[in-house]
Image 1 (cartoon, rainbow, N blue to C red):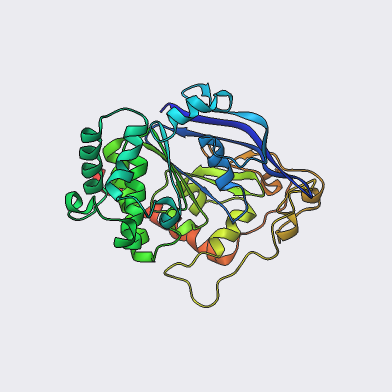
Image 2: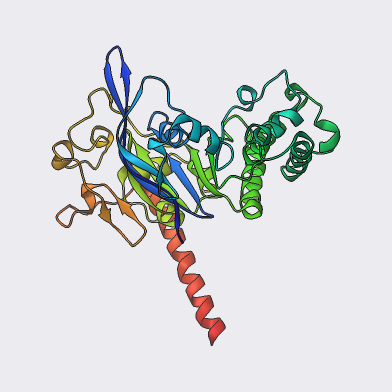
Length: 354
């Protein structure tokens, strides 16, 4: 499957009174046509900055120090603002996490949904309003035709998020970036929004980058997962590889702090805090919080080690000379459960063939 987006060696600093914050440090990943890539990590890990750089929506004090962001083999970082304006909303669109700050309280929602079509001059006003109605119906707004004249405050939180999604997809973008779109919603509505996004992906054939700190959400929507820490991607692979065959201690920590149906008692938080990116550490940035850290972790940054054709992790624990360590008990239980399921599926396949 061809790559629709390729980010290579992206590095971004932010100028502050205290000095330069090295927010994104040599980040590389790709997005394939029709897939969902989830980028996960704690707050401040660099997820939102990474995707905002794709949209060309970085703050004024941001400095791109290196790298490329290629969309259909054209570097977005080299495009003038006028060309980026033409791409935003039409080819690449973004859903933000707070619908109340994303919607204009003074404008009817029908006009807000139709606005991208008018800005990009792909339709006249009558056609744009018809498309807006059909997209509002597509995202599940009841009685959409009548409600196009209503204002944001007349909708529930879940409905407002559906309207934000409608605005993002009304021009049928090739890439849809969702920046924690379910954070402000309750669990039931979160599940509805996730189901909606999967359905929309099938219908409009878009590729999705899904940003979240909640690994529980990732399992239901992603094809591949990239785990970020301190401005770097430290592990990436297929969703099953990240959940059931994780290799980086930080990924273990995230999974260990995630509630499951088998969870009893208190959840285990990752100890400590992320490093100060004004002065990033010399070795592995996670070393001070890593109970499995080796001496080399504080001296030298680990390279990516290949686990499979699709799975890579930047941890010295994968070096042939590293000692064998076991992940936390909760993570081992998840891995064992998955392996047992795989064995049952293989046995079922053999029995079926027999």
